[in-house]
Each structure stands twice: as structure tokens, then as C-alpha cells.
Length: 396
Image 1: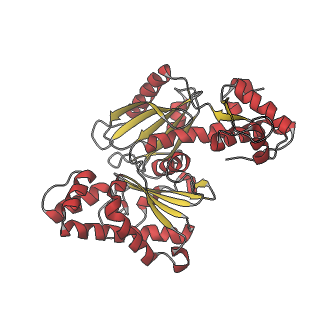
Image 2: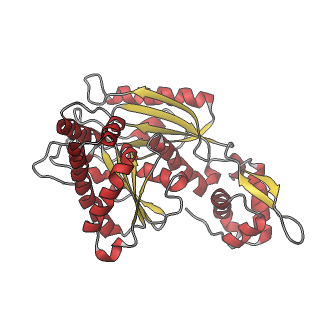
Image 3: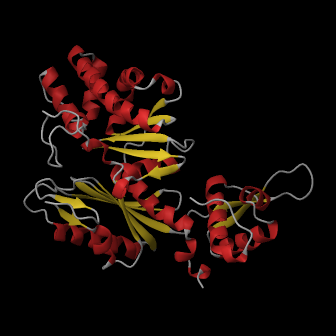
């Protein structure tokens, strides 16, 4: 995200975006502090701040305490000024969430979905997305839509979301298809990538510049931040950590290959192994946690094996990217007190000795809603960089 201003009238749009981002990141903040952080002159800052206030994006909050002279007026982002729609398109459900500029959920609609049954089709999915988004936009004035998705979306029908054709698969270009029906900017991203965005903007990674976010739920993915920016990789697919080869003799994955990491570490796989080990069905992470709390050597071994496999592959990412922190998120975070020590020990065996002291491990409590909220940040990223494309007062 752009931050520093330029003292030139030709760069007014850039300067406005820079100051708006500074208010979001550092508010409450004074005009003098904005000038210091941006490098802009005080007259330029005053002029642009006035325009942001007139556009209802920023407001004067209170006067700060000051030892001498006039007390500075503190500026804050008006988080209620604009609305964004984030959509978590998963294989078993769709979550629609309207948020404000601080990522607070204002309304949520959850609909069941099964991308593997006979009734599923891309046209029907597009109809659900268009109809529900339109209904929510009639209630809220939405400036843009962000959509998060897994890969693949459907194994049975061989459907993937994206804009690039892949041999043997039906490619659903959601951005193009929905833009024909909905007249707001639409952004599409991998679900693990946008979950990492949520952690950076509003979660446990707000103090980090370099981190790896591992999301484990129905599948497994990775969101990677380098120098404070998301690494979206080749064709935006940095998050497809779950489809690297883990066991060449393993089960067939939803992507069509055999032995993907997803077939070793996804939550349904973990629950199946736990059920087999203890001799009775375990249907949820919460139930598994209860059984572990009660004490079970068989389940302890399942967790040991799970942590060992995870550490090998996560440790390889650490050796490549040298992050400050590895963050475990999604449903797996509910098992933090049982996995943290095991995973940390496993990483110490895999990570290069020169990197072991610099990397830490965190578990994110944001196991729910972070993908839909992260999807809304796809819009916010663009809005804070180019506010003139959204606000009529800034055009021309």
C-alpha cells in the first residue's frame, strides 16, 4: 500500500490515498503528524484532509492534550462511511458478509452449498451469487465485492475459479461473469490468501511484516507476507500450499492428484484418523479437543504424527521465506494447546539452525468469519490505493 506523499499538484490522487491510509493505520492522528509521516507540506495536508472530511471519510475526533500552544485536533477514519460485501465461497457453503471500513460485520447471510452433488452447476452458482449479492446491495450501499474461493471448487464436476484456462477443467471466471450483472468493482482471491489479509489488517499479524499464515479446515492453504505485502505468486496461486506432493502413494485429492498435503492434514482427515485410533466416531474439532482433555494415548499419538507431518512442510516454507512468525489459523487453531508444543518442536528439527531463533509460532483465535472479512479487504486494498475511483467528489 502506498504511504509517502509527493509535493506536487500532479500527484494529488497519490497524496490523498497516502494520507487516507495513514489515518486508517495510525488514527487518531493530527495534521502535523500526517505531514511528518507523509513528507508533505502542512498546507497540502490541510487541503487534502479537508477534502477527506468533506467526503465523509475522515472526521475530527477530539483535541489532544498538549503541554504548550494550541491542542492539535485528532483525525479518525469514518469507518461507517462505506460498505463492502465479502463472500466466502466454500465447497459446502457460501457466506455473504457486509462490512464497514474497519472490517466489522454488519450483516451476514449463510447459504448451504454442495459442489460435489448432482444438482451443482456453475450457472446455478452464479445465479445464487448474483441474486443474494443484489439483495444485500439493495439494503446496503456497497462500493465493491470481494470473493474468496478454494482450489478446486468442485472435484466431481472439475470446476475451478479463476481467469486462466486449465486443461481438463471448467474455469469459472467469477469476476467477469458477475461484472456483467453487478455494477461495482469485483475482486477474487484464494481463500488462504484473503484469510492472511484479515490477520494482517485486523488480526494477530498486525505487528508483523514477514509471516506465513497456514489455514487448515476442509482443506489447507498458505498465505505469505513479505515486507508487509501479500505474496500472491504465479497467477495469484501462492495459497495453494495444500496441493504440494506429500505422499506419492497417498489418497486421491480433490484436485485430481494423489498424495497432496491436503489428504494428510485437512481437518476431515485428522478426524478420520482420530476416530480410527480411538475406536468410535469423532465428528468435530471440539469433540476431539474434549477427548484429548480426558486423556487418550491413542489420540496423543495421532497428534504427534500430525504435528510431525505439518512441521516438515511448514518448515520448508520457513527455510525459503524466513518469516518472523508462522500463524496457524482456521479450525486447527482450536487445538492450539495440544498442538503448539508439538509443532514448535517439529519445526525446530526442520528449520535451518540460523533461522530457528528468529521465527515464532502463533495460533489465531479468528477461526470463524475471517475468510469473508478477508475477502472484503480485497476491495479495501484497492479503495485505499485509489479512493478517487470510488468517491465522486474526487473525480475529474
